[in-house]
Structure formats: structure tokens, C-alpha cells
Amino acid sequence: MEHDLVVFVPGFLGTRLCRDGQDVWARCSESLIHSPPTPGALSALALPPGLGDAMPEDPFRLDAVDLLASPDSMPGLMSCRGYPDIRAALGDPLTAQLLSFTYDWRLSHRLVAGQLRTRVARELERWNEQVDAHYPDRPDDPRVILVCHSTGGLIGRHYLECQDGRETARALVTLGTPQKGLAQAARLLAGHAIPKIEGPGSDARARLNEVLRDWALDLPAVAEMLPMYDAVRPEGKSRPRLITNHRYPVPGLPAAAVGDVVGFHEEFRSARDEHRRTEPDGRLPYTVHCLASGDYPTPETLTLSTGGTHLTSGGNASLGPGDGTVPRVSALADWTDADQSPMLWTGFRNADMASPAALRDVMIAIRRGNPPGSTLAGGESIALHFPALAVVAGRPFAVELLGHNLQGRNLRTSMWRSGTAVKQPVLFEENGTDRYRAELIATPGRWWVEATVDSPRCVDRKDVTVFAS
Image (cartoon, rainbow, N blue to C red; front, side):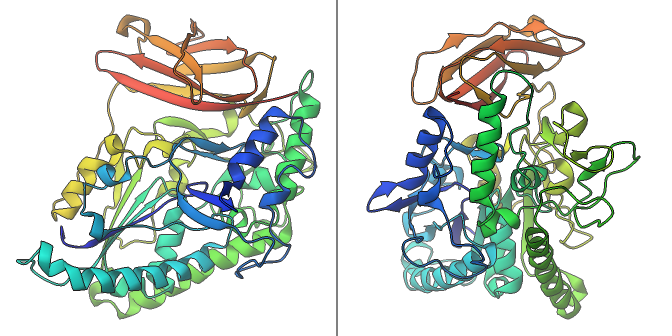
């Protein structure tokens, strides 16, 4: 397997999208942070309504230039730390046998899976012509090890089962992939990405939600992230429901978006079932390894008000175990063979799973044909949690820290603005058993909060976007 072509597929936000050499998302998101939200703030990133699985034409087309190298985030949805050390994370494959697949993350995962098919076919043919010079004693011809971060895993599995990628695949490795979608995607498309609160800053949050929703409604990729597990929790009911439940519709969530995600998952399931009927013993022709986490508070459900008129602000009742972005219930890859155990539980957040610290040892084992291990999670872990997903400059916001005996483990905490090295100390106070809390104030920008403890050493770092009021 060490002679295989390694293909890396980044997730949402993971590719720099440029026009005339300028990073469009970076420019628009910075404007959104430092100025009060306006309806046209994201117009340079817009797609035409009803695009579906088609490629956009000018002026909507953007160039997918290279992998994101520094941290970035989309308010209310997800973060990406970037991939500055991706070759090391993948176990140091030769430059000639590594393909970093860049793409327009706004577009349909179906469309991008077709683009991946074309690119992999070309690169695998090229690598077949070169492999003898590097691996003369290989046991067979090179195949493909597909490594996909976050929503890149939706592209990867669609490529394998719906685009004939399985014919040349050796392995699929997904890193924090929302196999069954994200509750936050539903909040975003319903206009509640940033929980609304009363008091100072509420108008800025409301405007930001409108800007984000108006933009995201025309992005096929966001509709295909909608949750396909029981993610809608009506107040007063004992169990959550699917977003397709007509008795408890999510107010503001377009029916067309729900139809899109149902069709997307049904197409994949249908192809998978068809292949299963023709496989010897019903087994996949490639192995699957899924890195996921259950160590961090993660948005899991949307709470529907009594009467179903609106979504509530959420709170701890809507949280469940996960990687901070993808809930554990969505990370489970139940489409694989029943007798396989593809889950590798790790102590890393979603945004960090493509880092060398999280991935390198796993990839070295996979590329050598060895089992990567059944559990990677640590014991005495810690977790930072921001009840507010985005905050307004000049207004206090809360940060919670969860962990056992933190004061006795030499707790150190700090915060800093992204792109700077100057760290400010943060004071956390006990707020219940194994819970700590701090109130912070920051200027507009992207900020990081970090906590470190010893015995054993654990570190957690989380970003927060602070918007101008």
C-alpha cells in the first residue's frame, strides 16, 4: 500500500477561492467581521439560484487555487485550521504520489465527485508510469488511498459508490465527516445560525443571520449538509424527529433544500445497495477508516418551540457528544459492511483531524497495511465550549471549560487574535463539578482561546469570531 496514490480531499472552506488572484472568501469574511452586516456583504461569493449540480458561469465562477494554509471559519457552521503540514500528516508520501484535490466548496458534492473522478483517473495514470522508479518491488499495481477531511468525506464516498471510484480504491479514510449531516446547517438555512439573544448586540446578530441565510440558500453544498438523523426536538416531546417530518416542520427551512439533501443521500444509498448485491460476501472492495470524536460538546439537535412557530436559542439541551462540529450520531458510518469496524475514536476536534498530531500515525499504519488501532482517545481530556457561536465586539461573552481536577493539573489558559503571537491570560472560575467559566471581551476579529493541563498533558484550542456591532 505504500506505493499507492494518496489523494487528499479537503472539507468546506478548505480550498482558497480566488478571482483575479484575490482570495474572495478571505476578503468578504473580513469585511463581514469588521463592518456591520449588509445585504451585499457576500455577493462576490454568491451563486445563481437553482444551480443544482451545474457549474456556474461568469461572473459566479471562482478559481479553486490551493489548499487553505491558515485558520478560517464560517460563522455558525464550521471552522477549518488549514492544511499547512498535510504531507507530513499523510505519512510523507512522495511528492509524485500525492494529489491534493482543490475544488469550489460552494458547489454540489455530486458535481465535485465527478471532478474528482476525472482528476484521479489522470493522476493515477501518471503515477503508474512513474511508480517503477520508486517502488520496483511492489506486490501489485498502485491503487488509490482516499483521505477526506470533514465534508470532503461526502464527496469521497459519493465518488467511490456513484462515480466508479471503487474500481481503483484501496482505502477510504474520513476525518470528522458528517456522514448524516449537521444540525447547524439546518439552523443556518432557517436563519438561526447565530443564536438570537435579547439585549445589546441582538440587532447585529439578526442582520448577520439574514446575510448568512440569503447567501447560503443558493449554495448546493450547504443544503447537502442538512441532518438526516433525528435532529428536530419539539418542546414537550420525548424524542427528536427528522427534518422531513411534515408534522413538525422547521420554520424557515426551505422545502427545496430538504428535497435536495434527501435526493443526495438516497442516490448514494441506492448505489451502495446495488453494489452490495454484487460483492462477494457483501464486502466493500476497499477498506474504510473513520476518525471521529465524542469528547466535545457539539450542536446535535434543533429545539422547536411549543406550537412549532420558531426555533429556540438552543443551549446545553441541544448539545451532545461529538468533535465540536459533527455530533457522534452523525459521524457513524453505518453504510459500511456490518462486520467491519471503521470507527477510530480520537481526542481531536474536527478542525484538527487533518493535522500531523491527529493523523500521521494512523496514515503510516494504513499505508503499511497495518491496523491503525481501535481507539485513539485520551483519558483525562479537557474541552472548551462557547455557548455563543459568534459574539459582538465590546460585549461580554462566556467560555466554558470542562474537565476533571483542572486546578490540580496546573491549568494554564490564554487568548489571542488570529495571526498574532501576543497571548493574554484568561481567568476561569469553578462553575460546578468539573466545570469552569470565564467571561471575555474582545475587539472585532478571529480569536483563539487555549487551555492546557498536565498529568496527563492535554490541550484544547477553540476559535471564536467577534463581529463589529
